[in-house]
Length: 242
Ligand code: NDP
Image 1 (cartoon, helix red, strand yellow):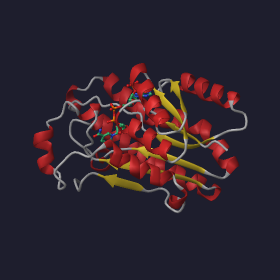
Image 2: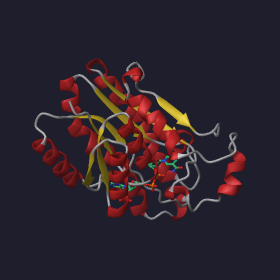
Image 3: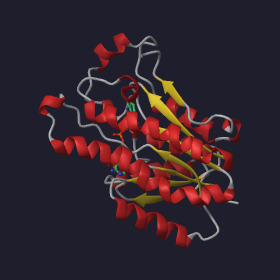
Image 4: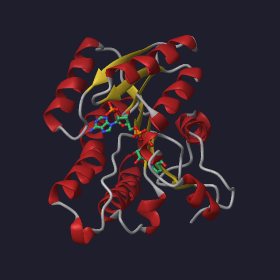
């Protein structure tokens, strides 16, 4: 039986590393992304090079109708299959002090992170409950735990997703579905490419930014059978930075 895993924002950065790690674990990857076709194709090629298979699912997770269309078309084309693992990884930053923050930067960040979580996860829940096995893994952030200045929008979105993780985990636990969150600190990806790494890493006890592969290893563990008794948890991966 083919086991399917969907990774939102799977084309680059942390999402790409998670796709590769889940491919190593034998999953068939559904690689979601919004715009960068070449990056998504590169992820798919890497998944195939690892001996797994996958496909690209291009849609904007913040767009409820587009997400519904993409997921229902996939389900219709695969009547005997279901998506066993979903990693809600797609996310954006629109940093600014709140005093200067345009309303659209507030709503865009919330729409991708919180709206995206709902749009993608809600249609996948019933099949997971029916099959009595599912893994929902939400990529949040240190920002959502402590709140960071310049990121009132991003902190609100990630903090909201942490609360949603805890609530949903209790709704579905009896049916073999776990819901957990991973809270990375600074990870070296395009998202952090504009940051002053040399200065910031002085604050990190481990003394460096994390690697996407380090986050991916944790996601793969949470997706595994070994993690069946972990749910409603937020696991930090931040080199000791709190
Ligand atoms: P990147 O900016 O490197 O990659 C973002 C990915 O998300 C891309 O694949 C992008 O696709 C996709 N994406 C963005 N918006 C949408 C959307 N609306 N619909 C579908 N896909 C979308 O980010 P990272 O890999 O750094 O971050 C991944 C996750 O980890 C995010 O949720 C982020 O908030 C979180 N995180 C990252 C940290 C870091 O230090 N890097 C720290 C803490 C949390 P495309 O290119 O096609 O637009």
